[in-house]
Image (tube, one colour):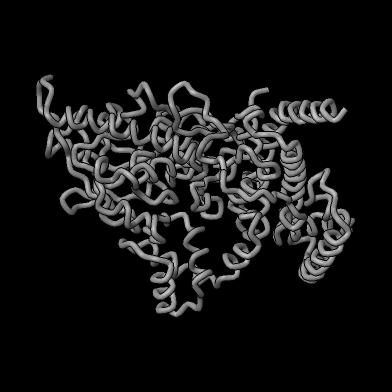
Length: 547
């Protein structure tokens, strides 16, 4: 069976966006920095790269214990801050806003924030600071010009807020906003304007367009209907006033990152086929972008998403790439012989054309890891995971501490007496709190999806633990299967977190989450036998060596 690219939570919802580390975040959702030479480290890095932050109880408590208003205020500041700053300066600003947060809390908040980049020497810069005022360009297609419309789609990536739908972006020409226009077109044509999101996510972005209100993916396993509608921007004034035509392009500049406002200027290609100086400079631009991407692959590997990969590239190469004679990422991928969108597990990443995107590389070989890599029982356990397991057992009216332990601790991990006692005490404390407020009827809409998520988590958790137990370099495992299991691990952890932290939203999206889990179960069945086979071979090799 071949893994399919279907069945995931909406990537643009804030609770499902990757974390900040390149990573992500988005994180990415499933960008897993897999260590190559250290036993029992796959768990550590998987946890580091899930939005659940499974390896840091302190960060979890800090992040979720902040008052909602304080968090919103801090995010609002970061969405409009354009200058470099340090943790100390951010802490001072936060306190001036009336928020009681110390240095460590602020540092954690920045490191976890998807809209902040950590630079050298302890400095930070926001996405707004990186991309405000930066140039990029869009070359409308013949279809768009025939309809006198521009579909922003992925074409503003990575210059705008990755959490904002492209249909809500506002484009201005000479200070006047270009009106929106809705067009119906074939789904395949619509997806061509969203392919940088990967075909695993592009249908969800398209359906999220307000023009497709009422269209559901869950009735057809995340496949689009034959025709969809896209909200675009009218090009009528450019065509009428400037004679805008096929081959011309729009030079874009982010005027207000927070508000999603973009200024545009028409670049009219002169008549005739003679090569122009700007064509030479633009051709050089494509070469510079190719080289920057290849350097990024070597340094950062496949990032959390294509968007994050591009964000890092344009951050590090803004002076060379954000120029008036720029081309576009979209055009580069259409013509490049070096770079393309390649399969990465059950997702898509930019990589060298024709090469399999590896799970292991220089970007995730941790030479500075300590020799002591022992994983304790506490490592596997977070508050929301305990709560989810307790509720699952209460729903089936068979709660026991041993049952909760069996759910959250991987099969094969032997608890010491001290670990078991500490874990039972912790579970008992949680159980008392959960029971005091648990309502079978109110929880009923989530019981099935929570149970399925925990069942899959337990299976994947145990498989990852068995991989770690082999004490074998991860390069020896099939790479795409290794990536896939890490992606499933990340996604299912996020679903469990969403159910416990945002239950109202989870109830609203219950059908989507159920279908997501169905897709992940399918993909797990596709790949676990290959990984099991390597684990068994490793075990047999150890037996032969020992005898």
